[in-house]
Amino acid sequence: MIKIQVITLFPEMFEGVLNSSMMWKAQKQQAVDFRLINLRDFGLGPRKQVDDTPYGGGDGMLLMIEPLTAAISDAKKHDPSAKVILTTPRGQRWKQLAAQNFANSKDGYIFICGRYEGVDERVMNLVDYYISVGDYVLTGGELPAMTIIDSIVRLIPGVLGGENSAAIESFSDGETLEFPQYTRPEVFKGLEVPKVLISGNHAEIAKWRAENSLKAE
Ligand code: 4FV
Figure 1 (cartoon, rainbow, N blue to C red):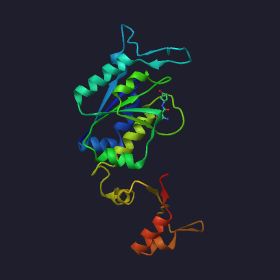
Figure 2: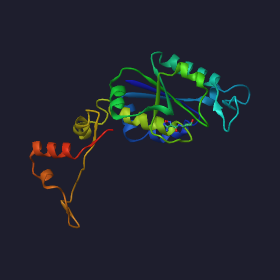
Figure 3: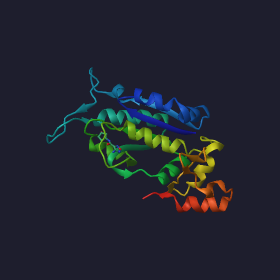
Figure 4: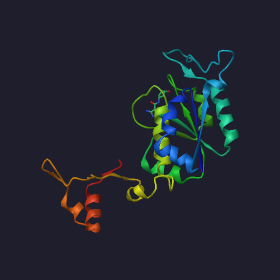
C-alpha cells in the first residue's frame, strides 16, 4: 500500500478526483491510502495566517515556512519514511519513467501544493523532489499534484486490472507513450482501420505499433 498525503489550502479540490473511477478503486483495493492535510489548520495566530509578503519587495504573497514545516511534521508522524514532493515550475519535468519508479517504490509521498507566488525557499531543506508538470505557471500546485498522483496510482500493479495491463506493459519501457488506436467500425465515412490491425498477425501488429509510436522526449 502506498500512502499519499497532500498538503493544500484547497483539499476540496481533491474530493472529486480521489473519490472517483480508478483512484476510488485503488483505495478500495487498499493499493493506496490518501490523506489530505489542510495547510490552514497550521496557520499562525487567530487568523491562521499561512502567507506573507516577500522580503525584498515584489508582487504577490508566499506561503510561510512555519505552517509548511508544521504540516510536513504532521504528515511525517503519519508516515515517517515518506518522501516530500514540491510541485513547482522550477522542478524536474515529470515523465512516465519517473511515474513507473514511484509506483514501484515502497515509499510514501507527501505533496506540497504551492499557492500564490510560491513557497519560502527554506522549505527546500525538507523537500526530496522538486517536480514540474510543464513550463508554464499555474495558480496552484493542486492540479500538478493530481496529475502526478494519477500517473503513479494507475501504474500500481493490479489497479488498472487486466483490461489495460497489456497496454501498460507495452509502455513499461518508460519511453513509448502512444501509438494510433482504432475501434469499431472498420470503415467510417471512407476512413479505414489499418489492415495490419485486422490481420491477427500479432508480430506484424507489434512492429506497426512500434514504428508508429510516440516516444518520450
Ligand atoms: C507548477 C508547474 C506550477 C507556481 C506558483 C503554484 C504554481 C504556485 N507546479 N508544475 N508548472 N505551480 O505552476 O508544477 O505556487
